[in-house]
Amino acid sequence: MTCSVYIATSLDGFIADADGGIGWLMEIPNPEGSDYGFQEFMAGVDAVVMGRKTFEQVVEFEAWPYEKPVFVLSNSTKSVPDQLAGKAEVVGGEPSAIVDQLAGRGLESLYVDGGRTVQSFLAEDLIDELTITRVSVLLGEGIPLFGTLPGRLDFALVSTERLSDYLVKQYYRRVRR
Image 1 (cartoon, rainbow, N blue to C red):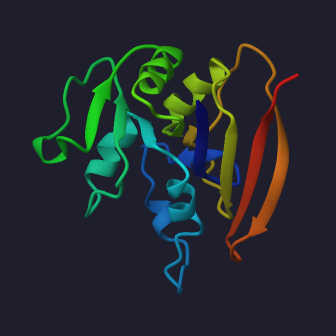
Image 2: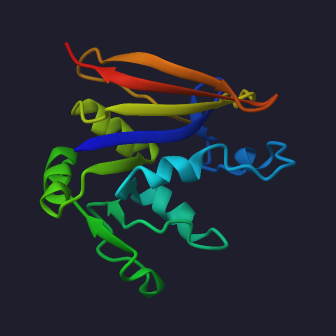
């Protein structure tokens, strides 16, 4: 199973502001309306695993953005809103158990999203690829992408792409020794 992260951070490493908001991402000038490679990335994954807080934000979007199945990692939420039946479901447990469960369903590649979820997958050394887009803003405080890990994880920088005056995308692949 391949587990990949595709996420944006501020220059100071935050994925959301102190209140959990991501409105600052919507303020980036994008005159061409580009998705900056997100659809291409999504074409390469079988499903999305996201944390409950991220799911709660996505549910508030104008339209449901995913065509792939979404698995909401939560030990407190038991179901998804009725309008998302068949599109999303709640799963619980440790990341490695979730990966095994989803592999048992025939899935081969996961998009892992949400701060705590990414951190928990990293803590179990389950992340194989990181695509991080740095946004040229300093938030000063907020929800960090990375947290404490039980040990060192090495990644190789595969590519760097300047997307605009405000965005730089870097792609990393896990190096296991």
